[in-house]
Amino acid sequence: MQTKLYLTPDDHRRPLTLEEFEHADAQEGYHYELIDGRLQVSPLPDMPHEELRDWLKRMLDRYVAAHPEVINHVKTPARVFVPGRPAATAPEPDVAAYRDFPLDLPIARRRWRDFSPVLVIEVLSEDNAEKDWDRNQDLYLQIPSIREYWILDPIDDPDHPTLTVFRRRGQRWQQPIEIAAGGTYSTRLLPGFSLVDPNV
Image (cartoon, rainbow, N blue to C red; front, top):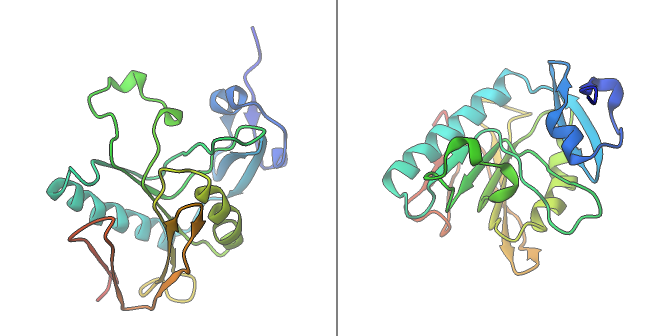
């Protein structure tokens, strides 16, 4: 019987197979991702990050209830698989919205690698903001189903975060859209939806 792996921050950058990663135990208090076959370890987000992530999910859940034909499920956090990489790559966005999540499939048969979102959202953390600006911007572009990538930035003022939106045009992102604190964002991806500053 193979010994089950126990991962800690000391394993950052350790080579792992997808099977090893999915079946390992891990030290609590950290976030673990598998990128190009190597473990990436980062600190867990702080409370403002978690509050904003939960707020985004509530907003999108209300939209799902009203427009299930547009998106039918929201996950926080999620795991998405990037196709065509030389080794397993599965970044974990803070929020993911799905158009055709298999809600009729028994829970025991649902696997992250079998479905992919149309929208992913990251809430920045001061400890690893560059991951979402640089690495994930590139990785999410490689997932054909993802039409938009949102970055919510609460670092300067958690009560009034800014928003940057990347919209897909073919194989590239269009010029990002910057929404200042207190602004509103609407998109054709989600007809009738508006994202408004949480404290406005």
